[in-house]
Image (tube, rainbow, N blue to C red; front, side, top):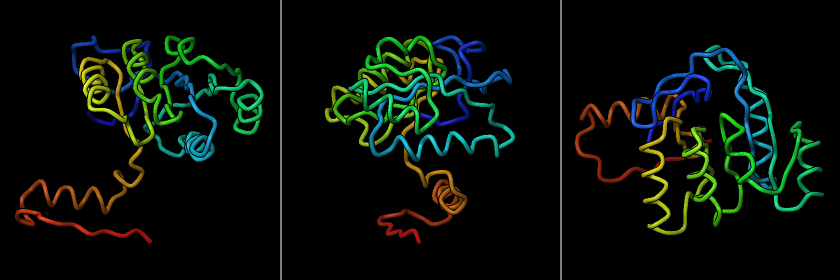
Length: 182
């Protein structure tokens, strides 16, 4: 799976075709599933996307949670409107689904969103079973949208540089890595 700038459903590759960068300057519509621990940092990141010239605007389309009162509270704090309690109602309505829900429900919403031609960004752990992992992998492989997992340090320059060194063979065969972030 690759993680690139998500693109709008308005300009997509075919489901079996190559993933392409978004070509429209229209804002991305984002649906966020989950109001718990990760909703605040991901909402904060969405607010800062305008700092990156290659990234289009973001429209916080809808926030989904289990309980109406809780999701209404979170949506108000995090600038989402409207709200809902059923993720199945939104997968056709958004360009990107941020799947921050409870770990046990990552697979079904992600698969449905990918099949509905949305891009998906999912918190970890991705799934609990091999079967769910295989189904998500298959959906991502066949999707026009992009699938990503929240490994937040993956794209910082030192990690990218290290990956280039490993991929080029310059470091030889890597047997063990121990890393630490400040």
